[in-house]
Each structure stands twice: as structure tokens, then as C-alpha cells.
Image 1 (cartoon, one colour):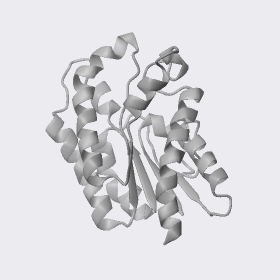
Image 2 (cartoon, helix red, strand yellow):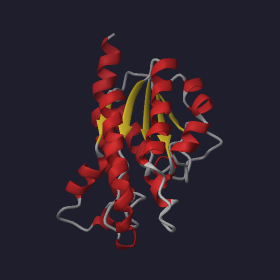
Image 3 (tube, one colour):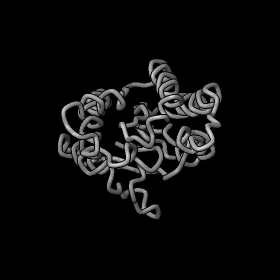
Image 4 (cartoon, one colour):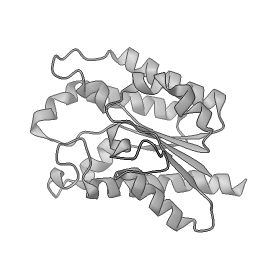
Length: 208
């Protein structure tokens, strides 16, 4: 069973880009480990093609080579924070319509050109003081992702909400020092949530 992780630096997480089976130091490493432990008799191929700094437009540009041609059984996508961050300094925010169009094109192609099950992870932001103003643009984009998930996702992970709950009674920096990039604890936490929801899809695929 082939599982493809797609996204930006949160998914990339220092992986060896010459070897797409390298899971880096982020949540894909922990998710792959937990999934393998849950299914010791299943032969999984885990592929990480996250690239640091990427936005929805970049995923769209590599749609054929890094999504369709991989022919995954499950593909997960965590994208969106850079669509905000890269435009934060000048507040020249990407219109929500363009963000949605980019993401929708990716999801539609996956549905039409592969048999992959889709997992969508919403972008998130922890309350780092220097980035709190990102919320002006990020929150509407999170709502777009949630709407797309209702339309396209086989499983959806509402990370912004889940992480907000997780750091309610402890410093947010335990999960992400800069509010965006997970610490080892944050990566393991996300990986655990990923494995929990991926299990539902994997069970369905194995039952076929």
C-alpha cells in the first residue's frame, strides 16, 4: 500500500530529497512508524514529497509528476500556511478565490486521474506573537480548506483546532517554537493524529 505525504516544510522537515522514501524529522516519520506498528503484516511504501516554502501554486505546478504519476493508494495534503506567510510582510494577501481554485484543481485531478483516497490536513498557526496578524488571512483560508474537505476528503484532520486544544494548558512552544514548524513533540502529536485517521482508510482498503 502506497501512502504519499504532500505539502510544504512541515511535511518536508529536513528529508533527503534525493530519496523520497526518507521521511525527514517531521510528522510523516511518526505517522509512518505508527501505521507500520499497527499493521505489521502490511507492506507499506511511504513517500514524502513535501518541499519547504511551497504554496498551493507550487503543488499545482508539480501535480502530474508528484501526485498523479506516483499512483498512491492514499495521498495526504498539508498546505496553506505559506500562501499566507509569503504575503504577510506587505499584506498583499492571495485572494481566497485563487487559493481555492489552486487547491480545487489539485483535488479534482486526484479524484479524476487516480484511485487514491484523500486525506486533507488543515493549515494551522499557534499563537506566536510575531505571527498573530496572519489570522486575518489564514482563518478564511482554513474555512476554504474545510469546505474543500467536505467535498473531496475521505478523511480530514482539523489541525488548527486540534492543536489549539492540545496547548490549552501548556505553552504553545512545546508544540512549535515559532508557531508554524512543529517541535519533535508537535510532529509526533500530528503523526499520531494522522495515523489514527489513516487507519479508517487503510481498514477499508484492506477489506476490499
